[in-house]
Image 1 (cartoon, one colour):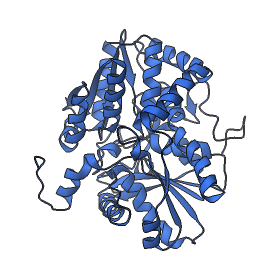
Image 2 (image 1 turned 45 degrees about the vertical axis):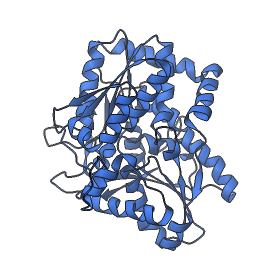
Image 3 (image 1 turned 135 degrees about the vertical axis):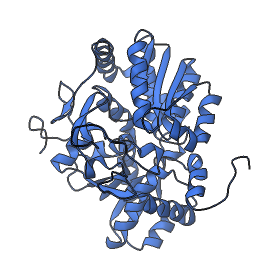
Length: 410
């Protein structure tokens, strides 16, 4: 059901940082003063025209926004059904949507007098964006990255180091995004005086889920205007990939109260949503619990211990999801499905061959679902999917999975 007080899906979270039963603020006493200060600074920034003027200037002249809304004519013809549009956020500076949010958080960090920025990253795109903005503003940058992801995302690791960031491989757990976030939180507790934690997704303790969503909502706001210009109306269906869910929430949020717009989030189905948990589909195969400062859907065992997820995509390899997505799932406003590694790889190749666009593995999950539903829809149905990242970082991993011999030295 909608928020009864405002009769809207767009007003959350409440004053306790909750979307229904999800969200909240589960952090140590050491972090609470910093969290409250961040919330206060963001509440001020939301009504500060100077803050938004600086954001808009950076989005325009540094990031390259607005990103194009592209009619995928070749893919549409190949699928033979609905019209497919792509929101081309992979054309942003740094190659993904992540920089939309990083700019906002680091502007807040500077207002708070913080000189050291820490971040976690899976696919490396959030790490690259954080390192990029820190380089621009002369801030120290430390990025925590699972050792497994360091290996499979070598191009992005090199980019971060070129930009002056310290990349810390995390060997605990399975060496993926969850473990990187654990170590980043430990760092933050130890270094609260000068350190700001730049979270890359719509998860974590309040106010992060709402704050990251608000910064990423530039995606959906642009789509509304661009689709009106292109088609004279809103899209019928929105589709985006989900790990923690920032690119999806950025696309979805400005449309939540448009009841005729169908909204679909696509989780990483890995090797299949099964009892072995060889996937990262927390809404499809998980249940509510608490992780990384918020209550949300998680992959966990009967004792509440967090399970290790799996995905071919480093950016979707997380055993939880943002709390607002959990709320949208339970209210029924958004649908959530899972796509396997094999299906994502097929979509990767199809996008390359029909559109001349090499996508990241993350949006390939969304694209794979597009290929499933578009042929069954009429030709006047409009689908908009978020092409949230480019595939430079994934070509070596994809080559290995497709059986190609390829050396990174040339």
